[in-house]
Image (cartoon, rainbow, N blue to C red; front, side, top):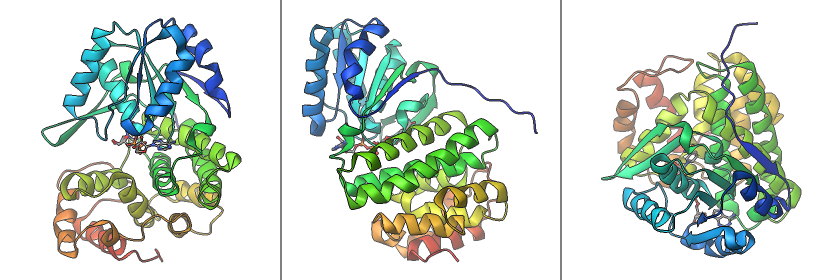
Length: 352
Ligand code: NAD
C-alpha cells in the first residue's frame, strides 16, 4: 500500500427523514443563543419554519442569498449579523445559501449550522467563493466549514427534477475527479465510490418520482459523500473546463458539469484505469464514460454544450483558455486533446 496523507475534516452530521426535528438540540449543542437564519428569497418559507423551530434562539432571518455570493450581498449579511449580535449562522438551502454563511464566517468566525436542500455539497467543504466585479474568487479556510450539518431528505422533496439531475451530476463530478486526484487516498476514494453509487441509484428514482423519499435519501447521502471528497482532495481537468466555460462563456454551472463529465471520463479513461474501474462499478456500467453519459441522459440532463448556449465558433477559444496554465490531470492536458473533447461535448455524442 502506498503511504498517504488524509485530513479528517471536523463536523457533525445528523442524517435522516425528520432530522430537522433535532434542530433545537443541535443549536443548543453549539451553544448558540442568537442564530441568524439564511435562505434565498425563494426558500423564505423554509427559513421561517427553521426560525420558528429555533424559537427564542433565533435573532432574525436574512432571506437574500443569491447565486455565487456577490460581495454586496455578503456585506449586507455581515452587517445584519453584526446588527443582531448573531452568534451562529443557520443556512437552509443550496450552495448559494451555504456560501453566504461562509462569507459571514470568513469575517467573523461565526459557527455555521447547515441544512442543505440540494446536492451541491458545499456544506462539507472549507471552500468559499465571493464574486466581486464579475470575478468569483475562491479560497480555503477552516473557519467556513460548517460545524453541524442536518441532512433531512424531506426538505428536498420539492427540489425540481431538472435541478435535482444537474446538481446530482455536479456532485458525481466531484467524486469522479477525487478518484484520480493527485492527492487521492484510500479513504477519500472509498467515500467517492460510495457517493457515485448512491447518486447513480437515487437520481433516476428521483427524476421518475420526485417525492420518493428513499430515492431522495440516497441522493442526499451521495451528495454528502461527494461534497466531503471535494473538501479533501484536489480536482483536475473536469473542474478546470467547467470553470472556464462558466467564467468566460457564462454557461450555467450545474448543467455544464453534467454535460462535460462523460467526456472528461473518456479523456482520462486510459490514464487512470483503477479510478475508472471504480466509476464503472459504482454505476453498474461496462464503461465509465458511457455509464456517466447514459445516467445523465436518463435523468434528463442537457445533451450537449450547444444545448446550453455555447457557440461552435467558441470551441477554439475555450480549448485555448482551458490549457493556458498547467495543472494536474492524470492524462497530460493538450490543446488538441481538449479541443476534440469539447467538440464531442458540444455535439453531445455518446462517448465511444
Ligand atoms: P442554489 O443554492 O443556487 O439553489 C438554486 C435554486 O434552487 C435557488 O432558488 C434555491 O432557493 C432553490 N432551491 C434549493 N433547494 C431547494 C429545494 N429543496 N426545493 C425547492 N427549491 C430549492 O444551487 P446549488 O446548485 O445548490 O448551489 C450552487 C452554488 O454553490 C454555486 O455558486 C456553486 O459555485 C456553489 N458551490 C460551492 C461549493 C463549495 O464547496 N464552496 C460546492 C458546490 C457548489
